[in-house]
Length: 422
Image (cartoon, rainbow, N blue to C red):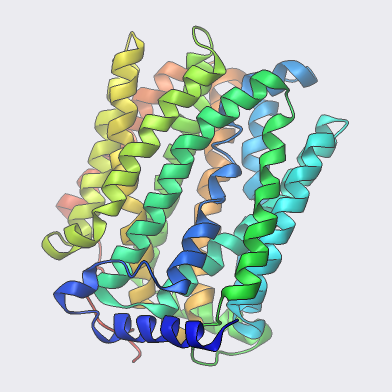
């Protein structure tokens, strides 16, 4: 890598951190190599679930399986990540963020491409489980790198841009997945190969961020766990779980099966696209919103959007109202996700940041895993059906909004210019 380019990039990041509390620092330093690598890696994440979500009914028919079994293509993706995320965090602190990120990208692409040749549904599930570990490495290292490199309002702005990119690609990939599965059932899996050139790009251009030395091995995990037992972080983990549980249970599992009775996969992908677009717009504005609204109010507003959106989807009788409903839900996602990561970064000391983010990732993956299983299981195995679950989800979101507004969580960190331990 050209040393002048590296020095310029480091200077951009140092300037960003130094001026985190100033007005200009609330913007995203797009020329920073750190930002570019993080956003490029994040753009691949929706290849995991949103890409194949509209194709679930097709996979069901191709392999002759049930709805609940088809939903395992979503839930198994996150199972290993729930358990292994803390250890991935340890690894990122021991050998560096860059090595873990590059390895995760390579494994993500290779395993994903291999799915196109899976001869049986069992083989496909096994590859998904292994790929989920690689996805966990990408999720953890990207948000940890942002926490390492930026502070205060600028960190929120960069995390908002990260979620915006995530939402943008999550909005586009369902349409792509719906189109590709119309060509061949395994065509969507070939898109995973895009992770390989991104890994090469990261290896060649990315500079390891400066960070404090952490502990080692199991002792590190124990110390990192102790740092996240404070009420504010526990509240944030609960928010992260509920956000993902409802999102993946309703939007990525229940909605495709509800819409499949009347619409083609590409239309289903279009509905999910507008939700992702709304999430992208809301997330991009998170840096500015964090100055005028506290974390509590942003969380409450996000859950309120969930409540309204799920209720609207429940009463919807046509495609237009359903689309409006998922737009409202998408706004809720865009409000909730950046504030959680920003607040976790503020609360966790630098030497345990990867550990804190890995535990947050475990909580997130738990929500993503249990959501599809719970919704498909209740709808099919118990016989409840998908429509009543939309109403139940709205009621849960109303309760969550009330808890935040009336009782209020322990105050979450906002606009701090450094880690608490600094």
